[in-house]
Image 1 (cartoon, rainbow, N blue to C red):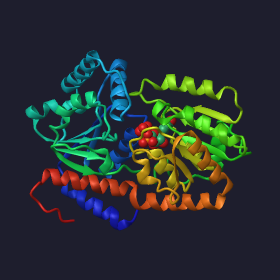
Image 2: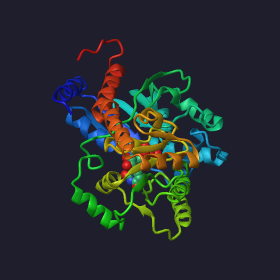
Image 3: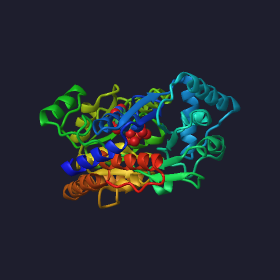
Image 4: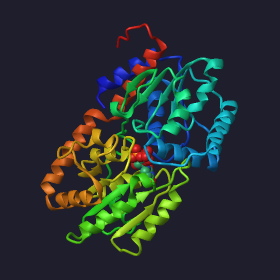
Length: 396
Ligand code: UDP
């Protein structure tokens, strides 16, 4: 990070002095939102912003409902019952009573805690809804249910123009980011990378193709195995599917079991269940990879893509959601469609290492210019200032 950009962030931080930004989401670990908050909150504090982070409490039944909401907002068909809607409301109402809402700016992430806005009439404050999902093709039933809550916010943030809908509130487009200095993304020594490979019993004898993702249907891990097996008919290689679970995602065990069954005892396929906070391990697996995949069926932003591009890895990823902001086809990676398309793209990169290297290098530059956390902090801080001082011209 350049000195001038840090100074600029400090200047913005000084203008926010005395204001508390209270982030609320549904999990401290697992998934991209927790990943971003775990970096954003301490870094904002370092530049003088009083940013805090709280999590709503919910039981398994609530998270089963919100996972269905998540899938349905991404456009997947889900049976949503009246009981599901009451579970959602009951949990939000309990949190409205139990969770202290103390921020000057209430920064609410995603649908799980969206109904906390019902306390706005009573406590005032400025409320932002940060939606990490592409809701442009959302299932109407779920959207109609959430809409009355979303409409009460002072502002909505989406990751890309195409993700949004026509809403009667101010909308801001702010894409996510990675922190290049975090354990997930910082440089590692070759010894550390080798240690991690040894820890997971992954030999370095063949090209390694990796997908890092929660075990989630929308990440299509079974499709990844099918694409890998097509590639392996002509090119010897290994597949690493590394992922963990998230406390707000009850589907992952079922998906993991399906993946393990599909992988069978194939010695070239490494299915790794990674504990939370395994940042160095994930960093090392990404760095050890010849190609990084992200074969999502739907995607919000896809932080794993930015992480891989930052490591100058050639990426093959589906042309969905925020992946298309990151992978410019044939320039910063390859966009693929379907299982055969993914296999074809992997083969193309494995047989053209110079081309693959060029894509990876371009990818790193693309992330440097667009998806690093300093840009993201600046965008958020300007938005906080705009909400707090609607009539002012903000000079920095
Ligand atoms: N991740 C992780 N451990 C895992 C799987 C994923 O730390 O076992 C991280 C991954 O490195 C990335 C984030 O979780 O930082 C996933 O974000 P992404 O936007 O790719 O997907 P999401 O899970 O939010 O749908």
